[in-house]
Image 1 (tube, rainbow, N blue to C red):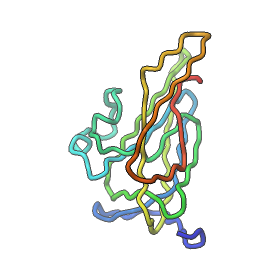
Image 2 (cartoon, one colour):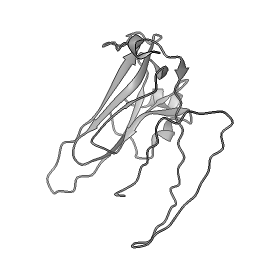
Image 3 (tube, one colour):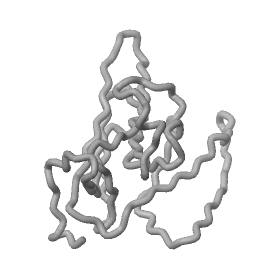
Length: 172
């Protein structure tokens, strides 16, 4: 989609069968927030559809809702705005559930208020659907005051366009 043809709309379709497309996300978090990861289930998820709305769930990760979840947006920064390349975007449907995986750590003695926000910027059409990919190594151990290097690889069967890389590290 050429830049001059791209147009944002302010209200997504209301019907559950009506698709809406987005190509830019904004995330914002208040002080004490550690991260926000927003995921959706492509093709639906019975576990996600059966989950109670607006309540806390065990902190075990979005994978509780199936293996077909894709990340729409993620950040450990207080504010981030990310736009996909022209012509690439995500398709969502009215009424589709999203998983908000967020953590907050209050380092003080008094209760504190935290907020996590998501803005989706809609476009009229996309030429190619966006896909996300993550690889994780949760078993990296680096003793205090030492250096270590880690190498890993991932082989893909198709060509890919890498438009962004992000990390999820604690403190460093």
